[in-house]
Image (cartoon, rainbow, N blue to C red; front, side, top):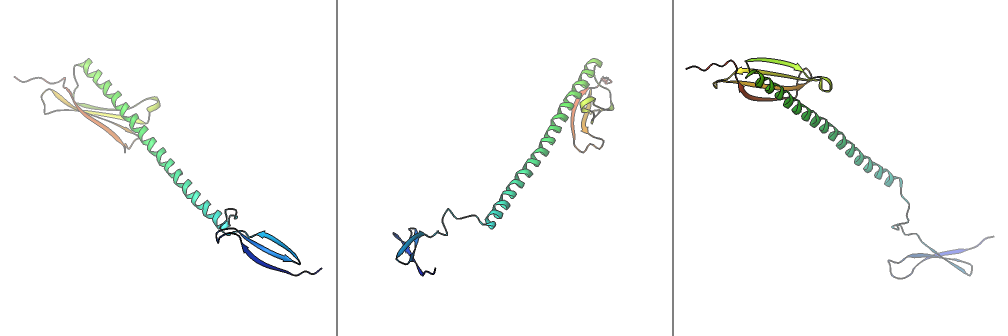
Length: 166
């Protein structure tokens, strides 16, 4: 069965309205809509999908880097807080010893904390000061053997060996 048909495009309304294709088959006319290339019902191309995946992966990579950086900063701040608390604790021990002994003598000592903080080390050194009756006491707390991050405090304490000259 052979049939002849002609096609023609018809736009209803203004130039912005939908377009229709009119097809004539014999005496019958068939009106069918022509899809608009800018229509929201258009499918997604492979290039658009790949571009979306690339943008999404860049965003996720940025978030993961920020997360890793915040974990590193959190570890450093936790180490700093622990070190300062241990420094305060050791200073309190030295102060208690000074109260019991009536002061401190020139000298030095070093050691390591126990249990949970066994990788933290401490050292203190007392030197006779130019100020009468005082020793300069320097205390340091550091983590590990090399002590790359070290916190120190220097204060003055009564020299128990000081004898005033008249």
